[in-house]
Length: 117
Image (cartoon, rainbow, N blue to C red; front, side, top):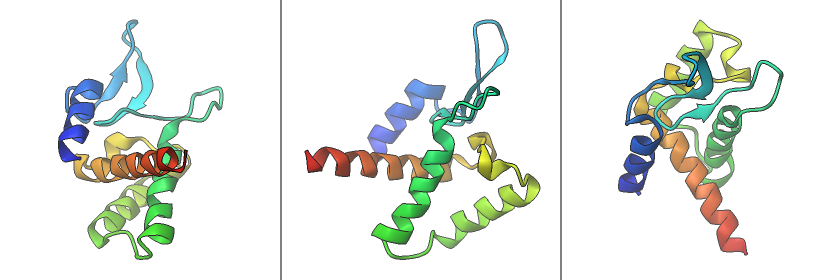
């Protein structure tokens, strides 16, 4: 699974914690190693908030334990620096390691969905 995550990160961002650059040179909505999408200025929902919610739900409902302390502390640190962050997360504020954990949460959700069919 780690190899898959590395391949996706390479494809999305060249394995770099970056902000998407559009052809016109402006910043796009995608952020981080896996290019999680922020909300648009028009209010269109991005996937970053959903990914973060699913990560929390995984630990709460599936693992039935708290988010690992080092990741919880990192999320709290980021939120305390920018109270608006949780409503529209910019994943470049997170370490690549935590981004990978959140990515795995999405993969597990997808696998669970596929398994039901």
